[in-house]
Image (cartoon, rainbow, N blue to C red; front, side, top):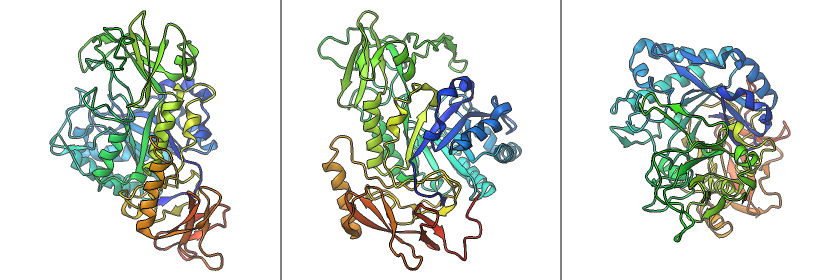
Length: 510
């Protein structure tokens, strides 16, 4: 897998084309990757994108800020036809060509595929589903796409809290990881108006027996235990919350965020409006959607952690999430704030994840109250410059002994993929837990070196002749690591990278 020089954390943001007018306040330089959403496939395999007229200029603007640009294809309603397209020889060929044409003609850095439910009937009711063949067909398609894009471009996927299914059973995804650079976990929309009880939109941990039994943590476990390397996962962060109508007083003892609710969802923020789900056939409904910036500018929250009367802010210590309740209207809002997001950021880092993902970029405040928290993500990640280098094959997940090294995740990649090695600790016990995880791995590897002073610093093992060895400063000690075969530690660019040996370095750039 080709990657880039060590630098800022991998932070992926989704740019909904229908909200382009609201992107003016977004600082693209705070992201490493921007996914333009959504390209929609048609039955013949061609792809439409309603922001096509400005796609190239948008890409130029984002590139100028130092971020990569991908076209995201599919989405909740945009992946209805995936199953049929991949079974039709002509449509499948058109689909491949359409993707690669977008990349080449609009100067993109790759494609992101948002097909959340291959092989599963749990998704949009309009989806065509082949329970036995969707997931195998998806893998074959991605292999062909990787061959067409070679090592020069990224392939990423937006995925749900469980792995792809075969005959309605979550499956091993290790083969997918060989041809895909990142899987972006959507660890939100866990609970909502579709439930009979109120509950957290994006719990860090779920409460056993309460609400949907999925969480930020369980999603990471589900993917890594089914063969996906942690350093190729990004953790999804919601810049929004959801409102529902409770049917009882949530301030009454016992105070809990799990109480009965109406099936009628209230109107959310000032941008929310009734919409019709033609697939479900339910007529017009409200989404109950509350963007973070509107929780702030509509006066629901007077500060990130203070609610305006009559709203009451509560904190759930199991799910590590805030929630709001209005006793006058009985409206409940579950959301994320800087406090809950910081806990998620630290948890993702402690698990050796490759980065973070945001839905959606325009929902933050103009001064980036939430995005700023994401910048604290600490990883052995890779920046988004254009210098091609080779990913280190050892020690890329020093914080989790069960995580695969990058040599086992041999997918082809563009210059902004990330091999993650976290120096952060877990959120529940910041010092002890993180240190225990780290020390157990170091003891196993037996390569903890002398003390160092600058956390996250890298240095080559040899200053005389180029070699593969290098050191990473974590928890005050040098950890000895190695670049992958055929590459050497190189500091000639001013940053430490694993670069091709001189005889192989004929094309270091894009």
